Amino acid sequence: MWAGLQNRYPMEKERVWEGRQLQLLAVLTFGVAVLFLENQIQKLEESRGKLERAIARHEVREIEQRHTIDGPRQDATLDEDDDVVIIYNRVPKTASTSFTNIAYDLCAKNKYHVLHINTTKNNPVMSLQDQVRFVKNVTSWKEMKPGFYHGHISYLDFAKFGVKKKPIYINVIRDPIERLVSYYYFLRFGDDYRPGLRRRKQGDKKTFDECVAAGGSDCAPEKLWLQIPFFCGHSSECWNVGSRWALEQAKYNLINEFFLVGVTEELEDFIMLLEATLPRFFRGATELYRTGKKSHLRKTTEKKLPTKETIAKLQQSEIWKMENEFYEFALEQFQFVRAHAVREKDGELYILTQNFFYEKIYPKSN
Image 1 (spheres, helix red, strand yellow):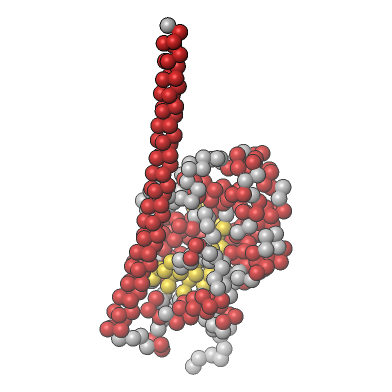
Image 2 (cartoon, rainbow, N blue to C red; image 1 turned 45 degrees about the vertical axis):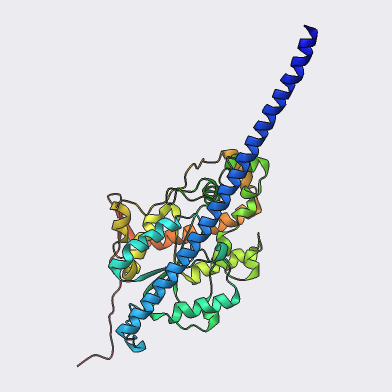
């Protein structure tokens, strides 16, 4: 009997070892399959990007060929209302896609072109040679006028390139912590705009609170430094995190180089002011935003609001203080512009009619 037990134990050990080997083999097989699928997904995304760029180039050639057949425009006949370019150098996660989709919805009706500026790896800083190309494209590409250009690029001063008629810059900014939280979850869960697209941090289930508590890099205060450099521009100091010079330059540009800067939290008022001042592009935008199906609106999924403790921890950073100072500055300016442009009646805002006229006109006509 004892001999039988001794013979059985090695057999059981062998079966356990074989089972573990099978489990290990299954895990390895699963891991290889996951890596293969991720590789295939990456290849598909790269192919999609190449296809989108090829389609864009084809569309441009078609437009140029059509205008060649129809006959080139005469420089002198370009209507003043048509000789207009708007650049929306959109800051990520500030409702920029939602707003841009309104421009897309209106472009056919209002007869203007919308062009997406797609930079490699979403780099907001252009090389000097690309700056020259971009300025030349925007100013001389008459077939695309009137044009609405949008993309995640920092402010570019057209005057330094000798351009006489500069484009109209507009933008929207957001509470810096809310923007960072939205971007954090967007990288992990995406949004309802393209729900099937695999995001860079997909699979990471750590909440924003947990990230801050652990001192993670994706939620570090340095990640708040984005809206200031987007308004500051292409100077190296603009991207020096915590630069007081960059903050002051961003404020200067907001006041002197941007036609209008809104805030995400008051997006409808921003759209209303644009419709009143730039109707060539935004006629019908307010009604579309208020009563449309809101198919243009985009929301990050799986977003969890940070706790008061997390917010307080981030607010101790000098970087947050500077970004928040810029946000408060932009908000005050926007509210000042709005206060002098609209009136409230029965809970609704109405654009003021013209409040100036001309008199004492000399010399008197006969």
